[in-house]
Image 1 (cartoon, rainbow, N blue to C red):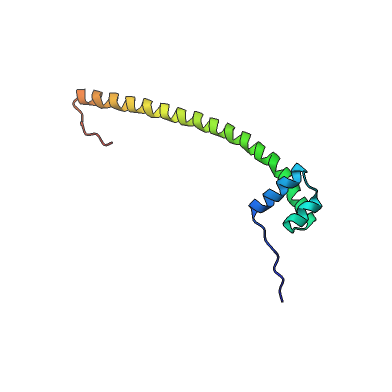
Image 2: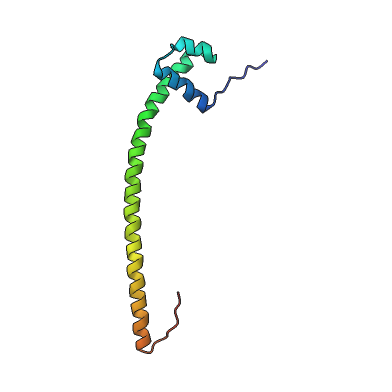
Length: 105
């Protein structure tokens, strides 16, 4: 007879860990309420606290990355506009000189 370990969803773990962090109930009370071993609750609580700081750091990095990407995008659009103006100017000049008027673009 094989005993399968019970697997908990991440939502359930987060719910229990948040309740443990709030401290409104003791770990023992939460363990009996959710039928989970107190060690597991402590582990989930520790993981939640460790990962919370990582999430905040990633959030600030993401906003900095978005700003740099937006700056780069603006620069690329500026270059595209400049190249279009140059292309149109050269096309009109070559037409004045009697060169091919085919537009390959």
